[in-house]
Amino acid sequence: MTKVVRLVVLGKQGAGKGTQCIRLSRHYVIEHIATGDMLRAAVKIGTEVGREAAEYMEKGELIPDDIVIRLVKERTSTGIAHERGFVLDGFPRNVHQAEMLNNMLLPDALDAVINLRVPTNLVLKRIASRRVCADCGATYSTLRPPTLNWTCDNCGGEVVQREDDTEAAIQRRLDLYELETKPLIAFYRHHRKLIEISGVGQEEAVSNRVIAAIDDVLSGVSKPTHSQTS
Ligand code: ADP
Ligand code: ZN
View 1 (cartoon, rainbow, N blue to C red):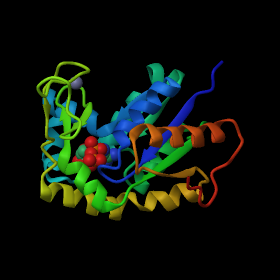
View 2 (view 1 turned 60 degrees about the vertical axis):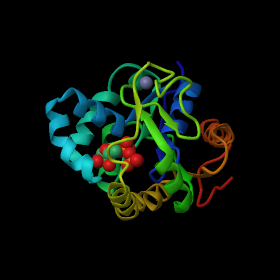
View 3 (view 1 turned 30 degrees about the vertical axis):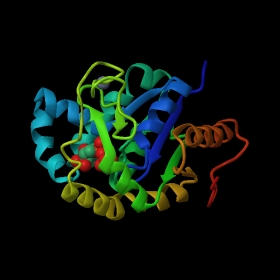
């Protein structure tokens, strides 16, 4: 039986989590679970969760933990995520969510948590030029648009600027990152799961660094320690 791989990627808004998670999910053939994408899809379809989430998201606030935890629980317990594993993108976002995730996975555990490090001045630039497919969540930028007319290369959907990529909402999300999400770095360091990787550079260079570090952990060559930079 193949080993199930369970990963979390942490990083500020615009650190490149989404892009790196897609690459990881292809490389390890595991499910990419992005809570932001799931919530945006729910808002678009107008489900009950979507109706409740919309007002939080527009302002850049976090959705109540119980809603997000329920979504993640459903997704991780079936299909490819259950059989082969997953990479979580945008979850957990605070210590309570991280504790719930640990409980949810018992008797198993996460294999590794990657912290993608990018300086704030760079993420601000990246977010300003960020564009996403309204249908599948694929990310583009004004510097790297889809091939044809802001139509998604993946699915043909319309590529737009995210509604919460306004200056005020971005600032709020970055503040919440410092307040709520940054403590997760100490949390996972304490649990000996943390791998710190620089997210600066070409996408492929970054993913090569990330995959090499994960492979070392999966094969037992190294165990995440206090500070593993690359
Ligand atoms: P970003 O990383 O740029 O903030 P995401 O797509 O990860 O974007 O999330 C968009 C929004 O979805 C967040 O601002 C928040 O409102 C909501 N959200 C996503 N994941 C979570 C989570 N784990 N807990 C609470 N809210 C979440
Ligand atoms: Zn698309």
